Length: 248
Image (cartoon, rainbow, N blue to C red):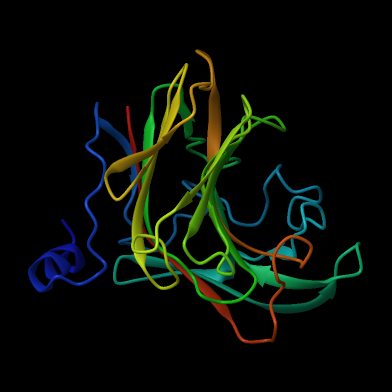
């Protein structure tokens, strides 16, 4: 247990939230208690989910990837997005921001059918912030543990793009800008389940099938304004992550 976890339990701080009860063994974990292992565990300068690998004018995003936008301190990874000064192919201003993916890394870790992934995050408040934990492989295999937009301050988007299921989970207490939340996803063959602070909040009844696998992506995107407001000024936008753990 991290000292920060113990402190929150003692003081009742709002950072502590109980995780879902894992079934199986912890097979992979990132506790952010050391500098990012670039290349070995994580890659931050490219993803096959972006059309140009390091930036993506598609999907209403302003992202331009820079590994320097992910820093670690006191057991927490902070993603910081700032105006980049370049212009995307769609004519919109790019924002330099952070992304972590296991794709292209030496470990090449992939989650697979039956795994439970959980993360503990502090939801951002900056206009235009679009954090997410999701999966990707071979142009598909996407399951979104969560997506969040501060303009919908109490809502998490939970999606299975493998077999078309989505839920807009709303909770005025558990989901809010600046609040820590523990979010888990179990990739079941016939049913994907999502957990928020230990409670199952959505079971999709569709699953991912028996042979599914994919790389993890954890990132802070910036909305371009089509579906959610774009950043309204040059001030940095941040997103904090305490850990990512996978049980199998």
